[in-house]
Image (tube, rainbow, N blue to C red; front, side):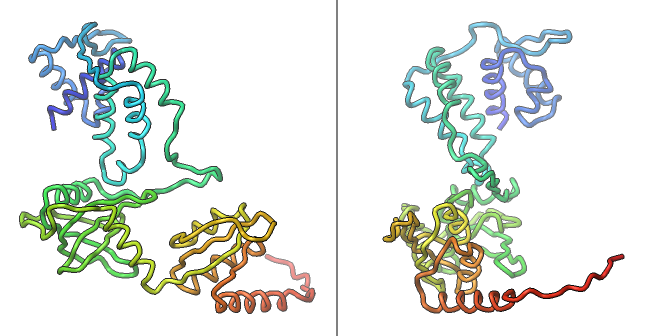
Length: 333
């Protein structure tokens, strides 16, 4: 761990020039005292780092102290710098590691590639935190200690104990055989087996975790994409309701946010520009609630039971508000 931190410290000084101990401490997420000890260790190892005193002082490297990697071309470097700052690393607790890796990539590039790639990466944004409607995409963070234990068990192939809070249940300890980690729309999942049965656990519901020394019972080779596809199909077939809907494109995102999954999507056969979607909802009540929120901007086509439920609800509401009522002028307070 300290070796990685020393390398990151050197890379920060290479890329940014003079930096104070306080700024270095914030970047490396350590104390100022630790930074000063690291500076002494680098000096003792022959790294030409020196201190400048005064108001604008700090630590810096002697000019020319660097190595270059010429194996990456412009597009390869741009791909790394653009794809790197996604939010998947936050889901799995790897944000600090990613920041360190990106510093190494940038520092290793030749000067010409480094400048061009860095400027180009500023023009491309992947998966921002808010959408066009200014809705913030919130990812519930998993405690670092918990995520570290989960990640270690997955990569080492060890059994894992998790304190897991399933929906509407008190947290319980479970021992599982971890298979892999998956992130979908900023939600992280642990794919595992428990007592020989397939299980999928949402990381945000884990309150604690402990890597065990016993080896996990799992195959040596794994195809996570296939496993996730199979489990998704199974999930959608277990007690969920499939609905065919017409929707105004302006309210499409609202409908998708309420649905469990989208099975199919395309233009509606009418010429009004609406869309036709086949969606999965948790149950009939969930589907009725989601369609009711959209009012006249959506229409459920199937199943018939859902159309009947929406018709009955709208009839009841229309009857309630059909005639005006006199409200006596009663002063408040």
